[in-house]
Length: 346
Image (cartoon, rainbow, N blue to C red):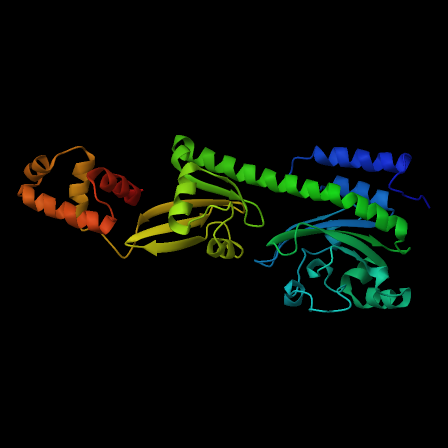
């Protein structure tokens, strides 16, 4: 069997470097494709290589990509029982049954069980029995404490994975971790581009935030930074804890709100990595039809006297309507009232 060493300059190292270079040229939403997994399976010298992307907060599989040896017609869409999504038991000497959620980053089944026990697991576990798996080697991409992470694993039907395989996996992991981060960035950019295309020229004034899987703010528009500072005092480059905790279980389209002095801040999950913020009057504080009519005329540039003539009321009545509207909108000037009223009508 070919041996892999970190300082080797032989054919295997060149294969690894060639794979890494080609993988970095990929531009899809996930860091690996079926073709790249085929090359990894050949490199590791095993029958199967599989990439899985998990959203632990929502308990869903975002992506399941097998190599070509895994016939898609022989495998039903991945389903995981509730027990799969639970964290590994604290202090468990064998985190292996749920390596995806264990504290360890690297997993090799033959480190934990002898061949006889692994054959028993193979015969009693549906996936292993179907594919005759006797040993598994894998590692995590991303941080297990985050809402999202991925797991790349290799399955062997005949031989046990050895130290050469361990060294090869450990050498590949930093490169694949970089691919994982690049794929996350591509998804962020795609979400932002889609939002800008939807909104056209109006997008420039939007309050938009791009975040990574750990809640760190990658990019925020000026309007978004203003709202985050005003409502949460955010200045540390991270989402407020309450927003981050909500986002961990939110699906695109879900909304989170904060209310203060008759005003409401609505935070919408516009995508997996993008938040849209909007400030408006609270639903509990509604303008009367006459107050809306007066504000609409103010927005047209009319003075109180002109509005009074238009509505056949006294100027003092117009002033009273404006005073009540200012209070409900939480503003003190005509300009601010018009701006807030415009947001209310959007």
